[in-house]
Every structure is written in structure tokens, then in C-alpha cells.
Length: 484
Ligand code: BES
Ligand code: MN
Ligand code: ZN
Image (cartoon, rainbow, N blue to C red):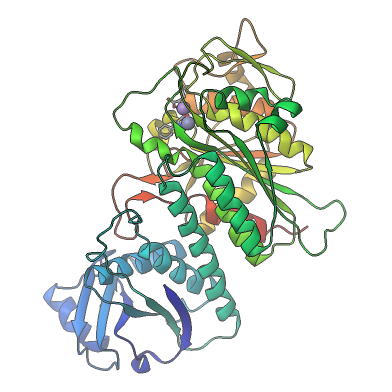
């Protein structure tokens, strides 16, 4: 999708389709809309779409009155979704060009970026492997139109484009099936990103990881014929202030999770291709970070493995030694995410990361706790948690702060090793986070359990079914707003 910014009064916008937000409980008298409010045909309810031809008072060929809901609830998150919903509506009508008008007080940087993001994200379809794309039209050109405003708005448009294109890149990766996206192929995608946008790229192979002593990660990888990869992408700002923070972004990269010997039920197992959603989000975040150039260094680490059963696979009861030196009793081979993250977190510390955020499709329990709405956020540090929370709120990626208290340590006791890889039946998302904390401490760290939010089981008005790309936008903002 081509995007651009134009500055015109609303009457003069020349476009196939002028998208105008209209509100609930606030009758709009422009362009003949008043009559439709009076007749009840327009109520301004969220995502209600009304397409009109030859609307009076505009040059545009068509006008799409896009229901924006209650004005007091309308912020950038709602605008992002509304732009997406409008694009998806127009797509279904085979319309290929549109312009969204932002009037004061919405004609500012944050709104311009959100509108572009929503449009690009709404345009994405996970249809790469459909050979007949005739039924899937796309909006090819999209403009944001404001009555005026300085060059900061052009920068905002660019930023929104870069972020949303990166998020769609992540969504496409997540949607790749596991026969086509192995750990090796994921590393190759990361290498291409590094080459195209100027990042340092490094990959640790099985031998190197064995040499270093990453027994926890390798224990998971051993069941698969596909070799593991620890993917590393580094961004360095032009000048690094001494003592500056160094952000580490760690993402779970299980390209397929069968559960291993503790095998999962067949029902729904096909979805376990999205078990690398955290890793893909961190690679996508680096794609944006490379272009937007924050002031602090950022390093992404993605432990990539396939979790398979087989004659060489690790067994329940096996004891592995992690890179940190801690021994782990593998009670359940399906709790593999924390095993690979443990070694990646330790390695991130060794690379000098002063602050860590991990994103992982880690537990079914977080879906029970929070549904598909909120990411589960766990933290060992209040200041970093606040930074991540602020970023997530600004980006409309909901996160809910979950407990991580020493009392829960009682749930993680092994008779034979330092720590088991699972707790009891209760508080599954918390015990998973407690396990990671054993490796993250004392580095300030936030853990994001995205098992419920990385995948949409049904399309939303503003987003296709499938991968969402969370928490990419929050990670980019976290890096961008960090002053060294
Ligand atoms: N990848 C899964 C978690 C998951 C579940 C992601 C549903 C997305 C949707 C993870 O590796 C896993 O299998 N977790 C187990 C842990 C259990 C064995 C303690 C789970 O949640 O059942
Ligand atoms: Mn698993
Ligand atoms: Zn998993």
C-alpha cells in the first residue's frame, strides 16, 4: 500500500473515497449526513460504515462515513482501528484508493501515525498460499489529509508506515507454516532484515551453543532433525553515551510446538506454528528500530528451535544444565519456551544488556486468565514495568500487570535439581514467569506472555484472522522514548 500525506481543506480533497469519521450522539450536518442521522441510517456507532456517492459539498467521488463511536472515547488507538476497519470495508467493495480526513484536534503527529498504521495493518491478508487471489482486492493508495500542519506530520506519516510495514512483516513470518519456516529459515529472514536496514547479525549454531553450555536450549532442540539457531540482531546508535542503557529484546522462537514427548492433543495443534510469534515480533521491531534510530543500543535475541518428539528427544525427568549453571528438571517437555528463554536471557546479560524485555507465547494459562484481550505482563523492576506500560498504552497494545512474588516460589520445587520446569496445576502463567525470573534476576526485566494475543481466531473489523504482530509497536516505542 502506497501512503502519503496531503494538506487540503476537506471540500477540496480529490479522491475515489473520502473517509470521514462520524461520531455517536453528535449529529454531523456536513455533506448531507444530517438527514441520515435524522432517519436513523447513521448512528455513528463504532465501525458502522456508510458509503455515499455524490455527497454534496465535496470533490471526492465517494464519501465513507466511518462510525467512530463516542467522541469522548476516541483516541489514537480507536483511530488506528477505525482506519483499519474503513480499509477492510473498502477492500470488500473493490475500491483501490482512499483518503482519510483528520480535522483538528486530531490533525497531530500521533493521530497521523495511528491512521497510517491502521490502514496498512487493515490491508494485510494472510493469503500468501492462496493461488486464487481474485476475490481479495486491496486498497493500493491511501492518503491522510489534514487541513494544514508542519513537516512533523510528514515525519509521523513515515514513522507510522515503517512501524506498520514491520508489523505486517512479522505477521507474515508468524503465518508461515512450520514446514516452510524452520529455525534456519527464520535466521535467514533475520539476516535479510539486517542486510537491508543496516543491523549487525549473528547466529549461534548448535556447536557454538554446546561449547558455551546452553544445555537448557539444546535439550529442547535435540528432538528435531532441524538444527536450532540463536539469532542475534544488534542496533547501535551513532554515538553511545557512556553508562547508557542497553535494551535487550528476547523473543521465543519455537517454529513448531508439538509438546515433544509430553505431546499435545491433535485438536488445534496446527496453530502451534505461531509459537515463534514473540521472536518474529522482536525481529520486526528491529526492522523498524534500524530505520527510526533510537538513542540507545538495542539487541534482539531469538532462540529458535522446533519442539518435536522422537527417539532422540528429551524425556520427562531429564535434568539439563543451563548456561547460568543452574540445573533444571524437565518435568514436562511441553514447557519448552521457558527452557530456551532461560539460556537466551543469560546470554543477553553476557552481551551487556542492562534491561531486558521478553515476549513469548508461553502459557495456555495466560489465555485462561486474561482471554485474548490483554498481554500478561510480569516484571522484577517497577521502573522498567512503567516504561513498558506507558508504551503499550500509547500503542493500543493492552497489557495487564500480573503478580510475581516470592510466595510463588513454593510452587517451583524440584527434589533432584535446582528448579523444575513446571509448577503445579495453579497459576500456570505466574509459575512460568517465576521460572524465567530465576534467570533474569538481578537485571531489570519484563516478561510479556502473548499466548492469548499473538493470534486472532476470528477476523476483527480492523484486522484479518491470524497473527497480530504484538507487542512490536510497544517495543519500538519503548526504544524510541528512552533517553540515554
Ligand atoms: N506454546 C505453548 C503455550 C501456548 C498455548 C501458546 C496456547 C499459545 C496457545 C507452551 O509451550 C506450552 O505448551 N505451555 C504449556 C505449559 C505447561 C506444560 C506447564 C501449557 O500452557 O499448557
Ligand atoms: Mn509447549
Ligand atoms: Zn510453546
